[in-house]
Length: 342
Ligand code: NAD
Ligand code: TDX
Image (cartoon, rainbow, N blue to C red; front, side, top):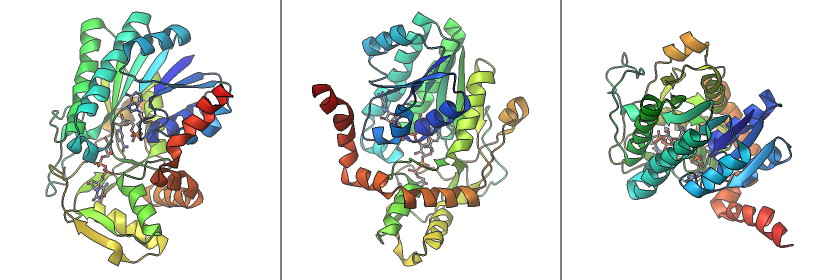
């Protein structure tokens, strides 16, 4: 079987590629990634050594390019991780979010219709449900919770989800969608809360906490997300949405303090900064459906996951230092372009 994984040079997509290559050595994985600022080919260095893996640099919103790839590869499954994923960037510049997250999804699904696939899987987010109030801990997002977005990012993801469901109903495209809570783990770009705080704390720089730090996120270790996507993509019911989350809610301040404690750094590094406009208060997933239908439960507890994550950032300092310095952007040039010229 051939699986196209889009956005595989990013955080979750790369973790997913490693999970698939290990679990299904007979499957061929083709990664399609534009290598935006968030894509890092160094992350896929080990995958490149596997003959079952191919990396292709390209844009999911480029119809001709995508069709050419489908003609070459005849994929059975397409799983779409590719997206502009950072809420703060979407507030600064929404346009690219609509282009990649919505038009890119449309282009991929049109290619799926044209060439035929057994499954198109859309990786979505709990942010499409908007947020929950802090004073109602009894409330959780289910798959029936209405779409009610806050940021250009979440609106673009919601737009894509609606399009995916429309392609199922209108054209009968065999689709599934997963909506996951906040992930953390290896290879996360250091603009997101946890890796940002780890890298800054290590350098003893101030840790910018938005507002009062009381916003709640439902943290899931990235490998648990990958296991869930794999299950839904292979065994989930067509046309269905599945929520993924681990009932692990923490305020941002709690998370930052745990990181400081583990790194043995002082809480005086915490700096309260201007809040994110439209900042969602609380996300909390009810994962009953994926548990009941597919038996999925998270395997990694937060205490273990955060320790593993901090250890990973400590032992892979060059990975994130290259990002902070911008050096990682030369990697593709070094690995491909210069070699091709030689
Ligand atoms: P990321 O920003 O780390 O990676 C995104 C990847 O997509 C990068 O490698 C980038 O180069 C690539 N990309 C961007 N635009 C592209 C385009 N036009 N064509 C091809 N490739 C393109 O993101 P992530 O955190 O790994 O998130 C992956 C997916 O999971 C996204 O769809 C996101 O919405 C969703 N999600 C993320 C989280 C989270 O906590 N990070 C939670 C729930 C859902
Ligand atoms: O410097 C910061 N200070 C801060 O207080 C940053 C970067 C974040 N925060 C807060 C904002 C959020 O309440 O921490 C929380 C987490 O922020 P992000 O890491 O930016 O994630 P979030 O906005 O919750 O969105 C993430 O989860 C859902 C991913 O980036 C999305 O792609 C995913 O869909």
